[in-house]
Structures are given as structure tokens and as C-alpha cells.
Amino acid sequence: MKPRHHSRMLATQFLFQRDLNNDDFEEALATFWLERKHSGKVRQFAEKLIRGVDGSREEIDKRLEEYAENWDIKRMSVVDRNILRMALYEMFFCLDIPPIVSINEAVDITKEFSGVKSGHFVNGILDRAKRDLSRPLRTVKPVNWDGTCDDKKL
Image (cartoon, rainbow, N blue to C red; front, side):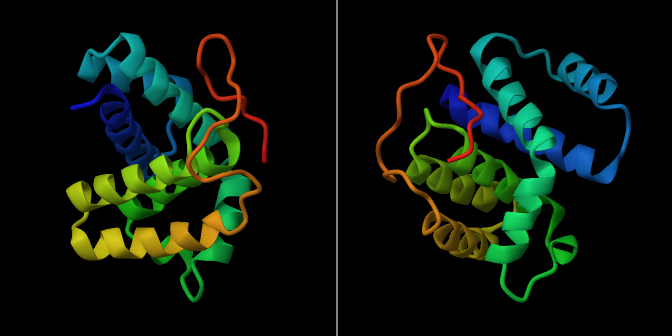
């Protein structure tokens, strides 16, 4: 499994857990990593996604409500909802990730965790979201020296 795909799967697991339990964020994250024993690039990227989604959740959820026509996000599958949040965070805040990669990864992870029908659902919502992007779908903008997201809304 590629490191970034693995990171996204771990981030999905934590975001799922976080959505169901409103424990102290830092304590929950520390416990999550203790149970998984990951370090290095996998953990670094996963944590960047986790913290980014958590810190931008209000804005991400507003977008998600807009793109998920006729769907209340509280009625979505918890897994699908958090995969969508992560993908929207990448698409609108991470300049170093081509949006098409975020979409493909989200669909693949959804299929792994929720099934093929959920993959179609996630793909449809992210397809609507990509229309609002003001950057190319297949290329990236310059990134920080350490390769992290810039966290600047596009």
C-alpha cells in the first residue's frame, strides 16, 4: 500500500472515531497513534489531514451541504461523510495535491470501507465540488520546502 493512501485510510479511521465521540482532540489523537504504532511520513500526512479537517470542519461542512443536494449530512454514512470531508479539505486547502488525486483516493477508500454504491455517491458529490475549484485538476501549485499543504483556501 502506498504511504499516502495508507495515511488517508488512517485519517478516515480517526475522523470516523472523532465524529462519534467528542473526546478531547489531543488525547484522542495520542491514543489513536499509540494503538497503531505508525510514525514517519505515514503518520505526518495522516495527522496533517486530521488536523486540517478538524480545524476547517465548519467551512467544509457548509460546502458539503451545498454539494450534497437533497442530503442532510447528518443522515450520511459516518464513513462516507468523513471521507468527503477529507477530500474536500484536500481539494480546497492543499495546494500540493492535484484535486483529481483527492477525488480518486476518496472514491477508492469509500469502496474499501463502504462499498461500490457509496463510491458512486462520493464521486458524484466530489464531481460537483470540483466545479468550484479555481485551479487545474491535474497539476499542483508550488509547495512548502517540507512538502506540506499550504492551508490557504483556493
